[in-house]
Length: 321
Image (cartoon, rainbow, N blue to C red; front, side):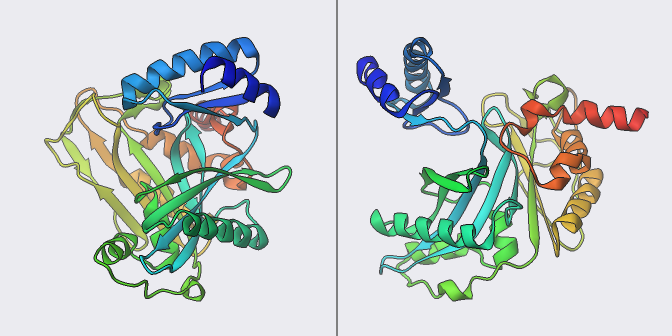
């Protein structure tokens, strides 16, 4: 909106509001405004950022919900009007509004809320005649037990492997079949969630320095293995991590019967994962500390989790004591 329209909308929905770039992604092009003064400044800055990053200065406003969980529903839709959902992914552990850990199912959703969220996602896909694999993202206000539409990602998500683990459905294969004109062979009743999956994004970042990007050439690259462990990566010894793009170098995904067992399996896999080279830091130490964090293990947290919990230093204190 222009500034005056933005001020009018913000007054109608009530502060705080969140300003988002219409073409944004990856946590970029987002500002929270708690006053009219912050709104004016925020719209101007976000529009400039959006133009530079995405070539589109468009922004929109939403009511800002302070404490929530990020839950999203995976959908598959063919060209013949068949749409199914494959349950949710919980992507609440974030830094700078970008996901670090994803899991399925969510430790916060009841079966009833899961069904409602899935039904809403299917309706949204039908309403826009969607075709292919897509994800409907929701803000889940766990205090009020309500959910709100956030956005739709019209592609395969980074975190799609956790859904593949718990459903047994190859999402990339399904996407290709749909694109080639095939009908969905799967029915909603075929989708049953089995076990628990967790994904850790292994980024070339220094978690001890506020997740500062870390570029360089990989000299040692050793991946974990074993039952229920999956690695998605294109890294190899001699690979150069560039400073210009997204910092993710690998995805480590595990599956087990329960959340507790999945956390234990993730700890074991992380402890075996080696990515080393001059100047290279990764988020592996952070993820190891997170898997030992009592708040994370409880499953009771929101998107401000990392702002409110010094995961790495808490781990250091535990070891010291």
